[in-house]
Image (cartoon, rainbow, N blue to C red; front, side, top):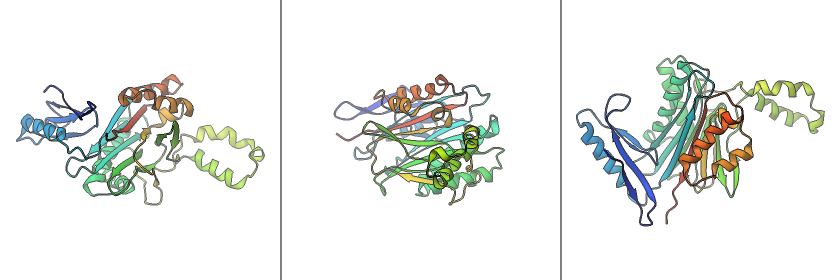
Length: 308
């Protein structure tokens, strides 16, 4: 079907839906290219059901929140793109949206499968069980272990729902979440890496940075890539948590192929370089290899559509 749009009374396009002949399981699927909503039709209904689902999405009540998402992922110098991003938009109660970005550990198919299962499970769990993002992450852990997947992944999950005025985030490993507020890009997550844990220990034990033994400076770069938590090994105590005071800001989730090679000030500029979140996400993902990165480079950008 041809893409169909819905705009508000000011002319802003809120949703743009289309149906496709088949999803991953061979069933027709309806997709909104602006907010990331998608639904797969049951086999008996076929494309007619997919079209009905698309119409239902276009007719979301105007008071329900709308978030546009931009997504871009590049394979970089790897053989496998083991990054995976997933989005869930609630069209039942209208009060929940969830986003996840997972970065499979290693350059092989098992890592990519772990990332896909973790991200898709987490965003569905955030709605299906009315869970917070940490519980959704633990549900993803259980799913990976249940399927005995030959791989592991790190991940960041963000959720917006009516019980909290801001975004809630949970993470393991070194995927990151940021918010762009008042012209500044603020990191909402702390990397679970050996390097970051060492920096925290040094800050606690050395009042004068100049007194830190030079031995550490030589080893920290190689420790940046040693993660100390992952989805498959996650527990309630190892999951990081953070939140924002409101949902009026642009939210960015990245894999380390973006935020490790790209300077923070460059990333801050790219996040707000255009009103189009899809274009901005592509610019952010491209910045990884352009600044010397060789890893998979993925950016998921979430933009709240403010009511008029």
